[in-house]
Length: 192
Ligand code: B4P
Image 1 (cartoon, protein in one colour):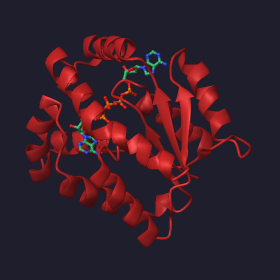
Image 2 (cartoon, rainbow, N blue to C red):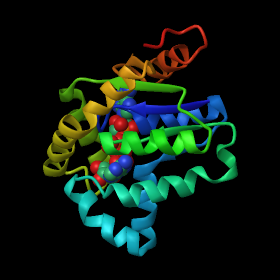
Image 3 (cartoon, rainbow, N blue to C red):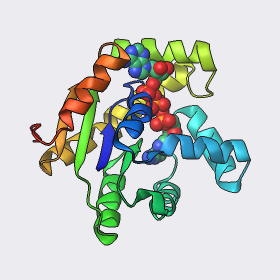
């Protein structure tokens, strides 16, 4: 199954993708995780991305597309993948569409996790206290939410227009949200 998870920062994409990966037996590809690995390795790309991420802004489309192309060319994606954190703007959505057509693996599902803003802020504050991620401070979080509204929200419309969007309520316990996702991905679920 080829699936993209959409939603604001803190909506639970990464959290649920980690569970869905076991359920669907396909790899979880998180562009945030790929970038954090580059930062941790101190690579040239990581050095470029580090400050941009800490400010809560988007890393350049060219870097992301190259990174994604490379990841999708690995053999473990033959039976599908869960994409988390990409596309984050319309240019990335177009680039992904073209890339997947080129490799003969068009997207099958786009699922949006819907969560109200107050709860997003609360969840990220919880992670900041627990993990101390560089971009979970209040100023970067404000910026990430702003970037989401202006650049990423239109991507939801992109998938709606392509008839691939399913919206899932992301409020509730982890298990509850997971069960809603599994149900939304079952063959009889409504997509549109
Ligand atoms: P990401 O790593 O994608 O970060 P994120 O949007 O905050 O989501 P994440 O998946 O980590 O969190 P989740 O909602 O699961 O991106 C980080 C940065 O990388 C970006 O700002 C950007 O700079 C760069 N980047 C990444 N992709 C890019 C791209 N395509 N183009 C350009 N730049 C890019 O979880 C958040 C918290 O909520 C967790 O603590 C979790 O435990 C909690 N939570 C989740 N579900 C919950 C529930 N049901 N109840 C209670 N808590 C819950």
